[in-house]
Every structure is written in structure tokens, then in C-alpha cells.
Length: 444
Ligand code: HOZ
Image (cartoon, rainbow, N blue to C red; front, side, top):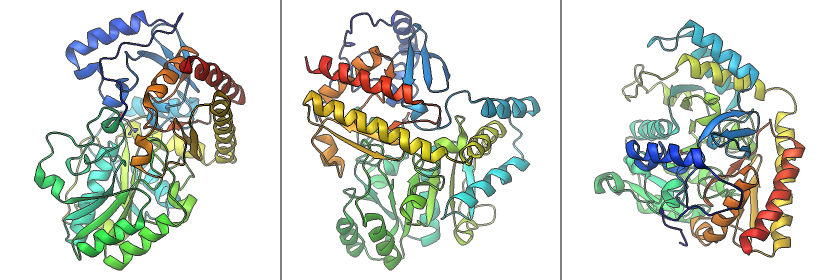
């Protein structure tokens, strides 16, 4: 892969300076590994140091150096209604005044669980946890406990958080930073994870046939978002549904990014394929730490305390996170939200495509709903191997030129950009104009 090293100096864009951020980064780097609390924020693939953020409102981020950015990461997915939405802020403030954590059940947990069950086709019951990692990790434990089998099938380039058995050919920052297989994962944990290319149902079939009665679950992002945005080929999800059913294997959709994003009911609603177990995160917490996993009543009643499969969490179902999540879901049920997201995202994808075409750079823009990636590679991109052929050096230059023009894209070729309901036509027009200039500068 053509990756700049972690130590690549910041690309200098005249007039775009980050002195306060740089000081904050130096301070943080002394006490926090890499100065960040999640590697995806470290600018490892684009070089240099990240701007430090001071606040965010609507579709905009504001850094400590006084720059405003049109935000296309939305905290890596959760902020679908925009930052500091008044209804979300009010809900959290009201909840906070009543107590921030009880370690005891609250009525709102059932209210949001009912909303999730009504929205997501595969879910009759769900359990709230605090992060997407916990959701996928717990979904796998449930699949193993339910089936009595050990192995799982994972797709190369899909990222499901940092549980041991999933840090194998993992996308997102694990790929960005060149560590798709992490040290610290024991051979035992890795041995039960079988790998397939994304979008290759035949490879899954062969693995299931070669491991009869041993595979608990086939796990994937139904729309891959952690190797850049890679949609499923027509028929792929349907084929996985059929194969897993034939083999008594559970199908798990990691909808941490796609849930409530590509449709209110997630990718499973959009594509009409219902998995056995679903992991949710990001939007469900409305910008606070909440995630969930869910399935049929038959499966979920095997979870402790009704069943023997153990999973727990002190801050699970936290009242502030539940308030933010519920307020966000309520906003997403207002008429026209997804139509508007679709139209705005299509306009953005179209504008980026034309800008890249006019600049004469290899490219393809891939989009599903309000998630998209401009790959610097003549597409289509169907899997991890395709994605890794992208020109990441060009991406890095483009990224910095966009940042200097007030557009904050994900800081890696191997991530998806997110459009929010707070973005306007004017924001998208500005972004496309910036992309034209940035591509010209990045090529120079
Ligand atoms: N799962 C996020 C999108 N790839 C990355 C967030 C993070 O690792 O900080």
C-alpha cells in the first residue's frame, strides 16, 4: 500500500496554520499515545497533526485556531441530525438534571428499545451497550452461545471494533495505519476467525462447506464503510442469507454505521435482507456513548439474566445516552429526512465525480444514501484488494487542500464520509467548488 509514514510532516498549505492545535497536540502526545484517544483521529495516513476542535454546531466544526469546517465525518457517523441540535441538547440537559447514571433500570431504556424493535426488521429484543466494539463482540458471543459453535467468518477490510477475534484484516484506522492484524491478538483468538473477501458469496460457501457444523456466524458490514464505501453487489446479501440458513449459521449484520443511516431500518431495510443478529451504534446514541445488539426473542432470551450467555456493563443504557439517542431517532422519523439526505448526498457525489473527472485523476465515487467515498482509483471498488490500489498519496494532498478550504473529510482513503440533515445546498456547492481547487492544487 502506498501509505505516508506516521511522521510525515504536515503538508503546508499557504495561509492555513494551526499553531494552537499544534501546541495542544504536543501536550496531548506526552500523555496520550499519539495524542489521540482513537487512532482514526491521528492523521496517520495524511501526515501532519490534526486540528483540535473547540465546538461544533449544525454541519460545522470549529477548531481552536479559529477555522470553521463543513463537517463530513459527523463524529464518524453519529451526528446525522447535525451537531448540538436543539432537541437533542434539550433532551440531554433534562436527563442530566435528573441524574447521569443510576446503575438501575429506567423507563427510557424500554422506550428506545421499542423504537429500535419497531425500526429494525431483525430485532425483537435488544440489549444496550456503550460502544460499537461491545455490540459486535457481544453479538458474536451470542451467536457462539446460541449455536454451540466456535468459528466465525469475517470479510477482509470490514472493521467491527477492536475485539481480539475481529482485528484480522481489519479496515478503518487498522488499515490506515498499516496494522490490519494487531499484535496482542493470540493465535488462539485468531484461529477461530475465517476470512473471506467482501462481495464474494462463493468464498463464504466454500468456507462453510470446509467447516461443516463449526461456523457460528458470518459477520459483515452489509455496506462496507471501513475500506471506504463499498456497496454489496446485487445478490450478495441474499446469497449470504441463503447459505447461512442452509448451514445453521447465524448471519450478523454490523450496522453500527449503516443503522438509521442508509434508511431508518438500516441496510437490512434498504436491501430487504434480514440477518439473525444486528449490531448497532453511533446514531443510536445521538452523539453520546451508546450502542446495541439485537435479534429475535428466541435468541435474545438466551442472554443473561434470562439465559446463560453473559454480557454486562455499568454504563449500559446510560440515561444521557438514551435521551440523546431517543431524541435523534424521533427527529429521523420526521417526514422527508431520508429523501433530503439522499438528494443532498447524490448532489455531492455527482459534483465530486465531475470535479475528479475534469481534473483527470483516476477516481470513482461510491455512495449509498448519505455515506460516500471518493476513491482515487478507477473503479468500481468491490473489496479490500481493490480499495488498497487507491492512490493514497494523492488522497493525502487532496485532504489537506480541502481542510485548508474549510472542508473536513475523513482523514483516510479507507473511511466513508457522512452527510447530515444539517448540511445545506450551499454547503455542498462550497464543497464541490473546494474540491475543484483542491484537486488542481493536489496534482500540482
Ligand atoms: N469506526 C469508525 C469509522 N471507521 C472509526 C472511529 C474510530 O475508530 O475512532
